[in-house]
Length: 220
Image (cartoon, rainbow, N blue to C red; front, side):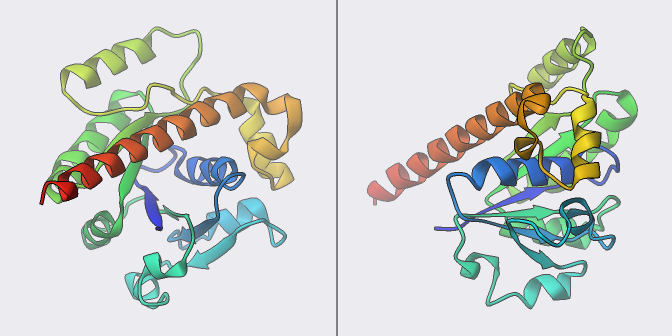
C-alpha cells in the first residue's frame, strides 16, 4: 500500500526540499520511495543531480500531477514524497491535502515564520482533516527559544515532531556534493541523527494511524 507524504508550507526557506530529500534517503534504505517535485525550479533534481537513487516525477502544475498513472497511489511505491513550492496556491494546497496520507509542515521558530504557518494550518490542513505535524527546522542547538515554541504549540494543541532539525553546515555541504546527509559519512552525524529520529517518529505515527483504521474497520 502506497503512503503519500507531502512536505508543505507556503513560507519559503523553511527546509521543505531538505526535509523531502533526507527523509526519502532514510526511508529508501528500508522501503521503495519515489519523489514528486512540484517546485517549478526543480530543486530536487538540482540538489541530487542526474545520478540520483530515486524516481523523480516533475509536476509543477496540478495538470502534471493528475497526468501521473491514474493517480500517485498507482505508482506502486511504499512511499511517495511530494515536495511543494513556496507560495503554494490555495487550489494546489487543497488538492495535495486531499491526496496525502500525512503532511509534514517544516517551519522555522521565528514569529515571522510561525504566524503564517499556523494560518496555513488553520485554513487548509485542519478543514481537510489531513493528519499533519509541524517540524521545527534550523533551530539553534544552544537556544531555549525552541523549547518556548514547543510549549506554545503544545498549549495550542498543534501537533509537532519531538525532534527538531538543528542548523548545521552539513546541509550546505550536502547540496554542494549533490548528496543527502545520509550519504556524507560521519561528518554529518548530528544532522543524520536528527532526521533519523524524525523518520522513526513518522513511521511510529503512521503505524498508529493504520492500526486505528484497522480497528475501526473491524467494528463493522
